Image (cartoon, rainbow over all chains, first blue to last red; front, top):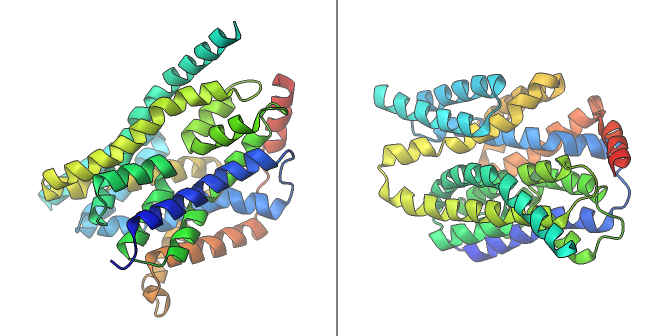
Length: 101
Length: 248
Protein backbone atom coordinates (compact mmCIF):
# COMPACT_ATOMS: atom_id res chain seq x y z
CA UNK A 1 0.00 0.00 0.00
CA UNK A 2 1.71 3.15 -1.17
CA UNK A 3 -1.38 5.32 -0.67
CA UNK A 4 -2.89 6.49 2.59
CA UNK A 5 -6.44 5.24 3.24
CA UNK A 6 -7.30 8.42 5.20
CA UNK A 7 -6.41 10.58 2.21
CA UNK A 8 -8.65 8.48 -0.06
CA UNK A 9 -11.50 8.85 2.44
CA UNK A 10 -11.07 12.61 2.87
CA UNK A 11 -10.84 13.27 -0.88
CA UNK A 12 -13.97 11.21 -1.54
CA UNK A 13 -15.77 12.97 1.32
CA UNK A 14 -14.87 16.37 -0.10
CA UNK A 15 -16.08 15.43 -3.60
CA UNK A 16 -19.31 13.90 -2.23
CA UNK A 17 -20.06 16.99 -0.18
CA UNK A 18 -19.34 19.45 -2.98
CA UNK A 19 -21.68 17.55 -5.33
CA UNK A 20 -24.48 17.89 -2.79
CA UNK A 21 -23.72 21.34 -1.44
CA UNK A 22 -22.99 23.44 -4.53
CA UNK A 23 -26.40 23.20 -6.26
CA UNK A 24 -28.36 23.77 -3.03
CA UNK A 25 -26.38 26.88 -2.17
CA UNK A 26 -25.93 28.31 -5.66
CA UNK A 27 -28.77 27.30 -7.95
CA UNK A 28 -31.88 29.38 -7.76
CA UNK A 29 -32.99 28.22 -11.21
CA UNK A 30 -33.22 24.68 -12.59
CA UNK A 31 -30.71 23.37 -15.14
CA UNK A 32 -32.41 23.78 -18.50
CA UNK A 33 -29.87 22.11 -20.78
CA UNK A 34 -31.56 18.98 -22.07
CA UNK A 35 -28.35 17.03 -22.69
CA UNK A 36 -27.02 17.72 -19.19
CA UNK A 37 -30.34 16.81 -17.59
CA UNK A 38 -30.62 13.60 -19.60
CA UNK A 39 -26.99 12.69 -18.94
CA UNK A 40 -27.42 13.19 -15.18
CA UNK A 41 -30.62 11.16 -15.28
CA UNK A 42 -28.99 8.18 -17.01
CA UNK A 43 -25.66 8.18 -15.15
CA UNK A 44 -26.74 6.31 -11.98
CA UNK A 45 -28.34 3.46 -13.93
CA UNK A 46 -25.30 2.97 -16.13
CA UNK A 47 -22.79 3.24 -13.26
CA UNK A 48 -24.64 0.81 -11.02
CA UNK A 49 -25.13 -1.66 -13.88
CA UNK A 50 -21.46 -1.55 -14.82
CA UNK A 51 -20.48 -2.07 -11.18
CA UNK A 52 -22.92 -4.96 -10.73
CA UNK A 53 -21.99 -7.11 -13.70
CA UNK A 54 -19.81 -9.11 -14.02
CA UNK A 55 -18.57 -8.25 -10.47
CA UNK A 56 -21.43 -10.22 -8.88
CA UNK A 57 -20.10 -13.37 -10.56
CA UNK A 58 -16.78 -13.00 -8.73
CA UNK A 59 -18.26 -11.99 -5.36
CA UNK A 60 -18.60 -15.45 -3.84
CA UNK A 61 -15.84 -17.34 -5.66
CA UNK A 62 -18.55 -19.38 -7.40
CA UNK A 63 -19.75 -17.87 -10.68
CA UNK A 64 -22.86 -20.09 -10.61
CA UNK A 65 -23.84 -18.82 -7.14
CA UNK A 66 -23.34 -15.24 -8.30
CA UNK A 67 -25.41 -15.82 -11.45
CA UNK A 68 -28.25 -17.34 -9.43
CA UNK A 69 -28.20 -14.43 -6.98
CA UNK A 70 -28.30 -12.03 -9.94
CA UNK A 71 -31.26 -13.83 -11.53
CA UNK A 72 -33.26 -13.98 -8.29
CA UNK A 73 -32.36 -10.38 -7.44
CA UNK A 74 -33.44 -9.14 -10.87
CA UNK A 75 -36.77 -10.99 -10.78
CA UNK A 76 -37.55 -9.86 -7.23
CA UNK A 77 -36.59 -6.26 -8.04
CA UNK A 78 -38.95 -6.38 -10.97
CA UNK A 79 -41.76 -7.90 -8.92
CA UNK A 80 -41.47 -6.03 -5.60
CA UNK A 81 -38.87 -3.27 -5.80
CA UNK A 82 -38.24 -3.73 -2.07
CA UNK A 83 -34.58 -3.00 -1.38
CA UNK A 84 -34.11 -4.90 1.91
CA UNK A 85 -35.99 -7.93 0.53
CA UNK A 86 -33.92 -8.08 -2.65
CA UNK A 87 -30.63 -7.62 -0.79
CA UNK A 88 -31.36 -10.35 1.74
CA UNK A 89 -32.77 -12.76 -0.86
CA UNK A 90 -29.57 -12.41 -2.90
CA UNK A 91 -27.51 -13.35 0.18
CA UNK A 92 -29.65 -16.39 0.96
CA UNK A 93 -29.54 -17.60 -2.65
CA UNK A 94 -25.76 -17.14 -2.81
CA UNK A 95 -25.33 -19.05 0.45
CA UNK A 96 -27.60 -21.93 -0.57
CA UNK A 97 -25.96 -22.16 -3.99
CA UNK A 98 -22.52 -22.40 -2.39
CA UNK A 99 -23.74 -25.13 -0.03
CA UNK A 100 -25.49 -27.18 -2.71
CA UNK A 101 -23.43 -26.72 -5.86
CA UNK B 1 -44.17 28.34 20.04
CA UNK B 2 -41.68 28.41 17.20
CA UNK B 3 -39.29 26.34 19.29
CA UNK B 4 -41.97 23.71 19.87
CA UNK B 5 -42.76 23.50 16.17
CA UNK B 6 -39.13 22.83 15.38
CA UNK B 7 -39.06 20.09 17.95
CA UNK B 8 -42.19 18.46 16.50
CA UNK B 9 -40.82 18.61 12.98
CA UNK B 10 -37.51 17.19 14.19
CA UNK B 11 -39.34 14.26 15.81
CA UNK B 12 -41.28 13.64 12.60
CA UNK B 13 -37.94 13.39 10.86
CA UNK B 14 -36.71 10.90 13.46
CA UNK B 15 -39.86 8.81 12.97
CA UNK B 16 -39.54 8.73 9.19
CA UNK B 17 -35.80 8.18 9.44
CA UNK B 18 -36.09 4.99 11.51
CA UNK B 19 -36.92 2.53 8.67
CA UNK B 20 -34.18 4.18 6.63
CA UNK B 21 -31.78 3.65 9.54
CA UNK B 22 -32.51 -0.10 9.61
CA UNK B 23 -32.18 -0.44 5.84
CA UNK B 24 -28.94 1.53 5.90
CA UNK B 25 -27.52 -0.62 8.66
CA UNK B 26 -28.10 -3.82 6.66
CA UNK B 27 -26.67 -2.43 3.44
CA UNK B 28 -23.68 -0.74 5.03
CA UNK B 29 -22.95 -3.96 6.91
CA UNK B 30 -22.27 -5.62 3.55
CA UNK B 31 -20.31 -2.54 2.52
CA UNK B 32 -18.21 -3.13 5.64
CA UNK B 33 -17.45 -6.64 4.47
CA UNK B 34 -16.18 -5.28 1.16
CA UNK B 35 -14.22 -2.61 3.07
CA UNK B 36 -12.62 -5.25 5.26
CA UNK B 37 -11.41 -7.10 2.15
CA UNK B 38 -9.81 -3.85 0.98
CA UNK B 39 -7.93 -3.57 4.28
CA UNK B 40 -9.95 -0.89 6.09
CA UNK B 41 -10.09 -0.90 9.89
CA UNK B 42 -13.48 -0.55 11.65
CA UNK B 43 -12.62 3.07 12.49
CA UNK B 44 -11.70 3.83 8.89
CA UNK B 45 -14.96 2.24 7.75
CA UNK B 46 -16.91 4.35 10.25
CA UNK B 47 -15.13 7.49 9.10
CA UNK B 48 -15.66 6.71 5.41
CA UNK B 49 -19.39 6.17 5.94
CA UNK B 50 -20.10 9.13 8.20
CA UNK B 51 -18.23 11.44 5.82
CA UNK B 52 -19.53 10.05 2.50
CA UNK B 53 -23.08 8.68 3.03
CA UNK B 54 -23.06 7.09 -0.40
CA UNK B 55 -23.50 3.39 -1.12
CA UNK B 56 -22.36 3.17 -4.73
CA UNK B 57 -19.79 5.94 -4.26
CA UNK B 58 -18.25 4.20 -1.27
CA UNK B 59 -18.26 0.85 -2.97
CA UNK B 60 -16.44 2.42 -5.91
CA UNK B 61 -14.02 4.04 -3.47
CA UNK B 62 -13.38 0.70 -1.78
CA UNK B 63 -12.46 -0.96 -5.08
CA UNK B 64 -10.17 2.00 -5.77
CA UNK B 65 -8.47 1.58 -2.39
CA UNK B 66 -8.19 -2.19 -2.90
CA UNK B 67 -6.48 -1.59 -6.26
CA UNK B 68 -4.16 0.99 -4.65
CA UNK B 69 -5.12 3.33 -7.51
CA UNK B 70 -4.14 6.98 -7.72
CA UNK B 71 -5.88 9.69 -5.69
CA UNK B 72 -7.00 11.29 -8.95
CA UNK B 73 -8.84 8.13 -9.88
CA UNK B 74 -10.49 8.05 -6.45
CA UNK B 75 -11.72 11.60 -7.01
CA UNK B 76 -13.07 10.91 -10.51
CA UNK B 77 -14.80 7.66 -9.61
CA UNK B 78 -16.47 9.35 -6.61
CA UNK B 79 -17.56 12.16 -8.90
CA UNK B 80 -19.11 9.72 -11.38
CA UNK B 81 -20.67 7.31 -8.89
CA UNK B 82 -22.22 10.20 -6.94
CA UNK B 83 -23.19 12.39 -9.90
CA UNK B 84 -26.86 11.73 -9.22
CA UNK B 85 -26.63 13.74 -5.99
CA UNK B 86 -25.89 16.76 -8.14
CA UNK B 87 -29.28 16.26 -9.73
CA UNK B 88 -31.05 15.71 -6.40
CA UNK B 89 -29.35 18.73 -4.88
CA UNK B 90 -30.46 20.78 -7.87
CA UNK B 91 -34.02 19.59 -7.45
CA UNK B 92 -33.82 20.38 -3.74
CA UNK B 93 -32.45 23.88 -4.40
CA UNK B 94 -35.82 24.68 -5.98
CA UNK B 95 -37.65 23.75 -2.81
CA UNK B 96 -35.84 25.86 -0.23
CA UNK B 97 -37.43 28.98 1.18
CA UNK B 98 -35.79 31.65 -1.00
CA UNK B 99 -34.42 33.42 2.09
CA UNK B 100 -33.32 30.21 3.84
CA UNK B 101 -30.12 30.74 5.82
CA UNK B 102 -26.88 29.58 4.24
CA UNK B 103 -26.10 27.53 7.35
CA UNK B 104 -29.23 25.41 6.91
CA UNK B 105 -28.50 24.93 3.22
CA UNK B 106 -24.96 23.77 4.04
CA UNK B 107 -26.20 21.29 6.67
CA UNK B 108 -29.23 19.87 4.85
CA UNK B 109 -27.15 19.18 1.74
CA UNK B 110 -24.67 17.14 3.81
CA UNK B 111 -26.80 14.00 3.73
CA UNK B 112 -28.66 14.13 0.42
CA UNK B 113 -29.06 10.42 -0.38
CA UNK B 114 -31.67 8.66 -2.52
CA UNK B 115 -33.82 7.91 0.54
CA UNK B 116 -33.32 11.07 2.61
CA UNK B 117 -33.82 13.25 -0.45
CA UNK B 118 -36.94 11.22 -1.20
CA UNK B 119 -38.64 11.78 2.15
CA UNK B 120 -37.66 15.46 2.32
CA UNK B 121 -38.93 16.22 -1.18
CA UNK B 122 -42.13 14.24 -0.61
CA UNK B 123 -43.27 16.73 2.05
CA UNK B 124 -45.42 19.59 0.81
CA UNK B 125 -44.17 23.16 0.86
CA UNK B 126 -40.68 24.42 1.55
CA UNK B 127 -37.90 22.17 2.82
CA UNK B 128 -37.90 22.23 6.63
CA UNK B 129 -34.27 21.80 7.74
CA UNK B 130 -35.35 20.42 11.13
CA UNK B 131 -37.23 17.56 9.51
CA UNK B 132 -34.05 16.61 7.67
CA UNK B 133 -31.95 16.95 10.84
CA UNK B 134 -34.31 14.54 12.61
CA UNK B 135 -33.98 11.98 9.85
CA UNK B 136 -30.19 12.45 9.70
CA UNK B 137 -29.89 11.93 13.45
CA UNK B 138 -30.92 8.28 13.08
CA UNK B 139 -29.94 7.49 9.46
CA UNK B 140 -26.33 8.68 9.71
CA UNK B 141 -25.41 6.57 12.77
CA UNK B 142 -27.18 3.55 11.22
CA UNK B 143 -25.09 3.90 8.10
CA UNK B 144 -21.75 4.54 9.85
CA UNK B 145 -22.07 1.91 12.58
CA UNK B 146 -23.31 -0.64 10.03
CA UNK B 147 -20.05 -0.31 8.10
CA UNK B 148 -17.88 -0.57 11.22
CA UNK B 149 -19.93 -3.54 12.43
CA UNK B 150 -19.56 -5.26 9.04
CA UNK B 151 -15.78 -4.90 9.22
CA UNK B 152 -15.67 -6.30 12.77
CA UNK B 153 -18.10 -9.16 12.10
CA UNK B 154 -16.44 -9.95 8.79
CA UNK B 155 -13.46 -11.14 10.81
CA UNK B 156 -15.57 -13.35 13.07
CA UNK B 157 -18.08 -14.95 10.71
CA UNK B 158 -17.24 -18.05 8.63
CA UNK B 159 -15.82 -17.25 5.18
CA UNK B 160 -18.79 -18.70 3.29
CA UNK B 161 -21.26 -16.50 5.19
CA UNK B 162 -19.10 -13.43 4.58
CA UNK B 163 -18.91 -14.18 0.86
CA UNK B 164 -22.69 -14.59 0.72
CA UNK B 165 -23.29 -11.32 2.57
CA UNK B 166 -21.08 -9.47 0.11
CA UNK B 167 -23.75 -10.15 -2.53
CA UNK B 168 -26.25 -7.93 -0.65
CA UNK B 169 -24.70 -4.82 -2.15
CA UNK B 170 -25.34 -6.02 -5.68
CA UNK B 171 -28.88 -6.90 -4.63
CA UNK B 172 -29.29 -3.32 -3.50
CA UNK B 173 -27.99 -1.99 -6.81
CA UNK B 174 -30.48 -4.24 -8.64
CA UNK B 175 -33.33 -2.92 -6.49
CA UNK B 176 -32.36 0.61 -7.58
CA UNK B 177 -31.88 0.01 -11.31
CA UNK B 178 -34.55 -2.58 -12.17
CA UNK B 179 -37.84 -1.00 -10.95
CA UNK B 180 -37.42 2.20 -13.05
CA UNK B 181 -36.64 -0.06 -16.03
CA UNK B 182 -40.22 -1.28 -15.83
CA UNK B 183 -41.58 2.17 -16.59
CA UNK B 184 -38.80 3.42 -18.84
CA UNK B 185 -37.71 1.22 -21.75
CA UNK B 186 -34.56 3.27 -22.35
CA UNK B 187 -33.39 2.62 -18.78
CA UNK B 188 -34.11 -1.10 -19.21
CA UNK B 189 -32.10 -1.25 -22.41
CA UNK B 190 -29.30 0.76 -20.79
CA UNK B 191 -29.05 -1.73 -17.93
CA UNK B 192 -28.60 -4.62 -20.36
CA UNK B 193 -26.21 -2.70 -22.61
CA UNK B 194 -24.17 -1.66 -19.56
CA UNK B 195 -23.98 -5.27 -18.35
CA UNK B 196 -22.78 -6.39 -21.79
CA UNK B 197 -20.26 -3.57 -22.21
CA UNK B 198 -18.91 -4.06 -18.70
CA UNK B 199 -18.45 -7.77 -19.36
CA UNK B 200 -16.91 -7.13 -22.78
CA UNK B 201 -14.55 -4.42 -21.50
CA UNK B 202 -13.17 -6.87 -18.94
CA UNK B 203 -12.11 -9.20 -21.76
CA UNK B 204 -10.93 -6.76 -24.39
CA UNK B 205 -7.20 -6.24 -24.80
CA UNK B 206 -6.11 -2.82 -23.61
CA UNK B 207 -9.42 -2.11 -21.81
CA UNK B 208 -9.00 -5.10 -19.52
CA UNK B 209 -5.67 -3.69 -18.32
CA UNK B 210 -7.40 -0.57 -16.99
CA UNK B 211 -8.47 -0.64 -13.34
CA UNK B 212 -12.07 -1.50 -12.54
CA UNK B 213 -12.69 2.11 -11.51
CA UNK B 214 -11.33 3.56 -14.76
CA UNK B 215 -13.45 1.17 -16.78
CA UNK B 216 -16.54 2.21 -14.81
CA UNK B 217 -15.82 5.89 -15.44
CA UNK B 218 -15.13 5.37 -19.14
CA UNK B 219 -18.20 3.20 -19.76
CA UNK B 220 -20.49 5.50 -17.76
CA UNK B 221 -19.46 8.62 -19.65
CA UNK B 222 -19.73 6.92 -23.06
CA UNK B 223 -22.99 5.04 -22.52
CA UNK B 224 -24.81 7.81 -20.61
CA UNK B 225 -23.71 10.45 -23.16
CA UNK B 226 -24.89 8.30 -26.06
CA UNK B 227 -28.22 7.71 -24.35
CA UNK B 228 -28.63 11.43 -23.57
CA UNK B 229 -27.96 12.31 -27.23
CA UNK B 230 -30.12 9.60 -28.76
CA UNK B 231 -32.94 9.52 -26.21
CA UNK B 232 -33.15 12.88 -24.40
CA UNK B 233 -35.03 12.26 -21.19
CA UNK B 234 -38.21 14.27 -20.84
CA UNK B 235 -38.86 14.31 -17.12
CA UNK B 236 -42.16 15.11 -15.55
CA UNK B 237 -39.94 17.61 -13.76
CA UNK B 238 -41.91 20.49 -15.24
CA UNK B 239 -45.14 19.06 -13.92
CA UNK B 240 -43.53 18.33 -10.56
CA UNK B 241 -42.07 21.77 -10.04
CA UNK B 242 -45.39 23.28 -11.03
CA UNK B 243 -47.00 21.14 -8.34
CA UNK B 244 -44.42 22.28 -5.80
CA UNK B 245 -45.12 25.89 -6.60
CA UNK B 246 -48.82 25.39 -6.03
CA UNK B 247 -48.20 23.62 -2.73
CA UNK B 248 -45.61 26.15 -1.60
